Length: 142
Image (cartoon, rainbow, N blue to C red; front, side, top):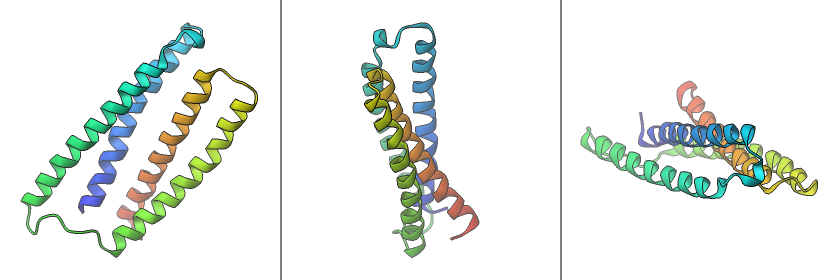
């Protein structure tokens, strides 16, 4: 497994865990509390920080483990670049289409809570689709 493929797995897993917890917490609060009273901004910023730290640490670890193996860390080859480009295209389409939902929420003057979390949800979904597409292309072939 190349460094790029390991990186894709890490991004998908960490994103799913961090934002899965965030959305479970926020939507649980929204079920019992008026959304105008939920302090989602602080938690959102903390989760972004947690995501960044976890991604940095995990990438340092896989870089050290990969470098310790035979041949060290290899640069990305043409296959890795094509897989990356294809995954980014698919994820970009998801984000582009999903932002229409956010735009509609803003146009109907929905609560900021829903607009912000819909935008975040679309970005997270786009990242998961991007990573999922790359993983499928790595596993099944390009």
